[in-house]
Each structure stands twice: as structure tokens, then as C-alpha cells.
Image (tube, rainbow, N blue to C red; front, side, top):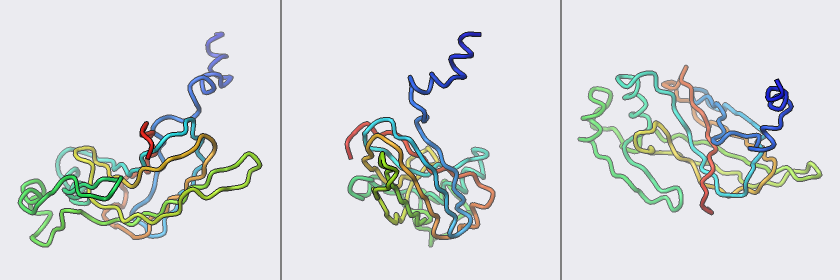
Length: 186
């Protein structure tokens, strides 16, 4: 009973931090102009990896639809260099009739605008980032797409994520904007 009172009082969050790692924010990619905003408490001053995570309902046809969207190339979030090179033959082996010879192995380019404000002690806001990312490619085997790596100071931040373009194939698909500690300075 004493343990339950301890947990209920919020002491656990004081000991281990109030935010889970990763922090997950749902975003609707099926609607252009879809915006989500969330206040996040950053517990440690580090670099943070920002990415999209796509729900996959099965490892068959549904997974192939997401693979088509994500593509077969991947890029460094540090300098934009291509890390993995897909080609049409690889894509065709994996996706079959979902693609034709016009398929681009970068997948569907999805513009995502990310705005981050740090909330100061006097409740004023300091702009940390306000960038449009033309996301493309994937993170191999994870059904994710990297957006950026950004340094954040400890404290409260407001994340505003905007989907710029409608992707009807994402209708009913759970997609999360993820904030995960990177443990390396950006």
C-alpha cells in the first residue's frame, strides 16, 4: 500500500524523469496542413533524433505498402549523403506489382515542417528550430523515416509538427513523430 501511495504521488517521475524515451506524437499524413503541437519536457541536454514511425498491420501486403512509401535509399541526417542505394530491381523483387519502372527508390517525398520553441523560466519562448524537411528514404527494416538530429537543452519545449502534403495512402494509418535521445552531440 505504501508503494502505491509512493507511485501515485508522482515520486517515480521525479526519480526517473517525466517523459518516456522515446516521446511519441501522432500525426496524420493523409491530410495536408495537419498540425500537432505538444509541450515536451526534455530531461537531458543532448542531441535528439527526430523521425516518423509507421504502424504496420502485417508483414505481407501491408508492410509492402509502407516499404513502397519509404523507399529503398537512406540518407545521413548529419550531412545528407546517401548511405544506402536501392535500385529498381531490388524494389521490384520486394514490391512486385505495387510499382512500375517509374518508381523512385527514394520513396514518396514527404515535406514535414518542424518548429521547436524552448519555454524560458519567465514563460517566454525562444525559437530553436523552424525548418521544412523534405523527408525521403527509410531506416532499414524499421518502418521509420529520419527527419533530423537536433541539440536541445534541458527544459520545457513546444514541438509543432505540420504535414504539408496530403498522402491518401496514409488514410487510417497510425504514424508517430518520435523524439529519441541520440546521446551524441549533433
